[in-house]
Length: 110
Length: 110
DNA sequence: ATAATATATGAATAGCCAATCATATTTATA
DNA sequence: TATAAATATGATTGGCTATTCATATATTAT
Image (cartoon, rainbow over the protein chains, first blue to last red):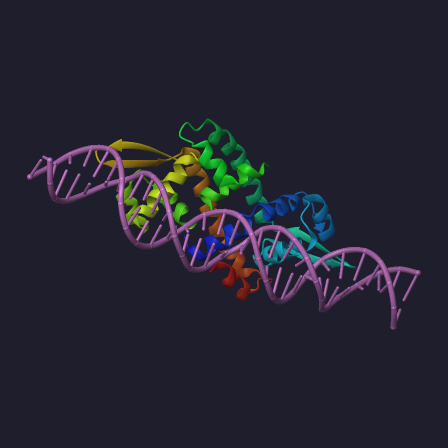
């Protein structure tokens, strides 16, 4: 496992805003304005995130008039769905974990 | 998808040192000294990471004499293996991506 | 009881990055 | 061509966190 690929992968997918954008794109292609409305992330911030996702090859873009329409990469779509399932399972795990120091976790999560 | 669970999950699994520890534990249970040697991470740093992984329920621990032996949670083991596969596939993707701005990526990856 | 080994804890720091703000660019329309 | 709409870019900053260092605790052996 190469560190560079690991970092690039988790940098792109491990941010909540970017993951939200990806999970929205997993349903259907969206232009920037739609992403802004759906995710609630401010426009220029969305653009920065799209730059990142483009550069990582996680999404592709096409132009239609004034709009730019983003589409998720097929493999990334699968990955996003897998991870959502894992996190859903993790939810039960972390709640039932008898070792978990709730205070530590809530601090960490902030 | 809840933000707290997302953050907790990626916080724990998205760090290269912690992921390295988890992927070592995916092969067999290890005590701290073994983790230090295998991963090359300094001892007190390993302890900090194990604290995090314990609190997240990603690993369990048992005592044997002076040693503390860590074992990976079964579901986490599966997740780690899945992600390694995804990153391996991503390697090909990022290389073949015609949009990728290599300079941006190398900067981002640092 | 003292030394040695294994591991954990606490505090401090330096680097990274998401969000924000201001502004630029592109395209369409009046 | 001037205005509006959609999107991108650049610079700044505040918060977070991995690492490091120093030290503490626990266990075993002499």
